[in-house]
Every structure is written in structure tokens, then in C-alpha cells.
Image (cartoon, rainbow, N blue to C red; front, side):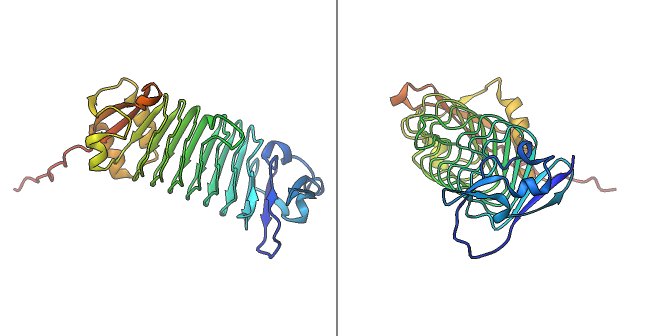
Length: 289
């Protein structure tokens, strides 16, 4: 099956585009003229895809969106299968909702990225705004399945009210992470702003490089950190290691972990796992003849 490339050129049109359902399973295989007539919304009003994006053939079995996409919302919404490559910074509600397939964003995303992700893989190479994987304003639960990988930093409230799935952040997260978290796993390789895990009822939060204060005291509302050995950690860490910088990845198997339980005000069934870096290995000595 032929692929498809949709390009939004740099222009001065102020319209904000809603690109829900502009996904591989809806477009691939259609004639180019039919794709140009595909219905979208521009500032909430009915419009045609071809009025705002150029349409051309692309690599086999792949949909590519590229260009000036910062005012394009709901990219990947409605996707259930296939591969979607997005090149450029995008607007709000990326992959929300998305039920399958793989979406790769070579850029940054706005608010509510993957907030209604149910299945599939979303990889964002840049930063994300507020409420990534968190509940939408009209919903009580956020991301409920799948995997979200963020290569940069996160705005406030990442994984707030998250229900299920795995979120991995290579950069830093701002305040409010995992607030009201119901279940699932949030992994953070960078710095973590407080508060953290407020109202968390269940789920796991792994901090790969916690501050000295956090490693000593744990987050507010949680038990003090205690040494732990958990049976599920080796499998999870092997998956995490594939996405980390080499130096950090190599440290994981030798790292020790501490565990806090909380939020105690919400039943205390959530857990925060704090990595303790292993001692530095001495430089290898070479035998001299």
C-alpha cells in the first residue's frame, strides 16, 4: 500500500485545525483527490483537509504529517493501528484518544498529550506541556493503557489521575506529577518538582535521579524511604534501559532502591521507588610487561 505525506506550509492563516481521524487506517489507500476532500475542522467549522495541507504520496504503509503544525490539535486522535510520523511541533491533545498503532513525534507537543491513550505507543522526542497522560477537564481518569515515551521535559501535572499504562520521561517534570494517580507506572530520569504524588492511591513512580533531600525523606505524605528488593523491577528496568543514555543505562543493574508508600491521606497504596546510584567503579589497571 502506498504511503502518504501531508504538509502544512508556513503561512499566515490564523485558523486552529482539528485533525482528529487524520490517521493511517482512515486515509491510506484512498485516492489523493478523496484525501483532499477529507473533512476536518478549522476554528471549529467544517473544512477540507486539502484546503490547509498539501497531499502527496509517501513511503509505503506510512502516514507522515509535517510542516507548521503548532496550531494543529488532536493529531493521532482516533488512531487504532498503523504508523504515524509527525515532523514538527504540534498543538494540544496529541494522541487523545488513541487506541493502537505507533505515533512518533519529532518535535514538541502542547497540553494533554496522550491524556486519553488506551493502547499503542506514543514517542515524543521533544517537550510536552501541561497534563500529559492526565485526565481531560471533563474526565475523571487519564491515560488508561499503552506507552508514552517523552524525550524532553514535562509541564505540570503529568500522569495526574492516570489509570493504567507506562509513561517514561527522560527530562525533568514540573510540579504536580502523579497527583491523584490511580494505577500505572511513571518513570522520571530527570529532576522532579514538588509536590509529587498528592492523592496517589495506587501505581508506581520510579525516580532514577532523585535529589538528596527526596532520597532521604521521600515526598510529603509518604512513608520514609526504606531499602527494598522487588521481584518486578528487573523486568521493568530492562525495558527502561533501552531508552536511557548509555551511562545511566549501565548503572541500573548495579543500583539499589528505596521505597516509600503513600499518599497516606489517600490510603497509602501507591509507591515511589528511589534509585541509589552505585559506587563508581575504579579505573581498570593494565598489566605492564
